[in-house]
Length: 119
Length: 110
Image 1 (tube, one colour):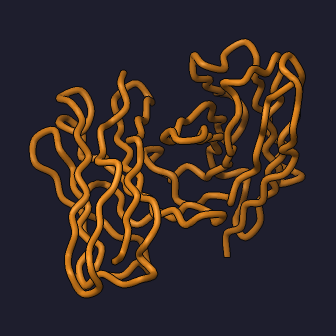
Image 2: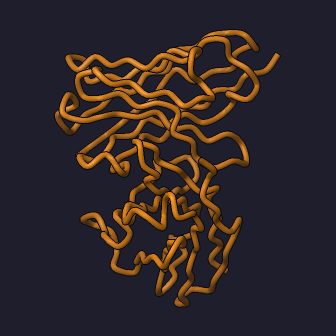
């Protein structure tokens, strides 16, 4: 049974940093692309980053490029999101999700972790 | 690319059918048969219910069905049940590894 569990969300001041983690179980983590998706209050979902199975390809949305860094440790079945220079616009629930093998949808999601950026 | 357009809310009574639309463009929904739908209950993990426009993952009720016409994809839920209440999000491939989401639709079961 596939399971994804995010952690690390917190209240942080503008300009601050935070590191999110996602631990996977129930599948061979190293065989799949993984992604970070967020939902700001009252807004729709936004895929902000994805990382290939071997970390050879990493994508960032323009909204986070240069501030966020995605990484993974296949030996630890873990996905990470390092978030720097946080602003109010980054307040959201952050989800990790597994890309389908065809890369055009997300077949499993975690339940999310809340990041609040406020002074 | 712009986000896909969904109605903010829909409602229906138990047993009825409802349809949620997802309006895109000829660059995304209209070109690719790669639309997916996700059901999201508060404080729970979003769940894939439809992929590649019409396909249902294993374990998803046949009451959920997807379709597409031109630049608009649709999710239909038949035989509405109280447990169907929640948020529904559409997503479409838009080329160049881009995946676009809609704004989400809140379904209320009356």
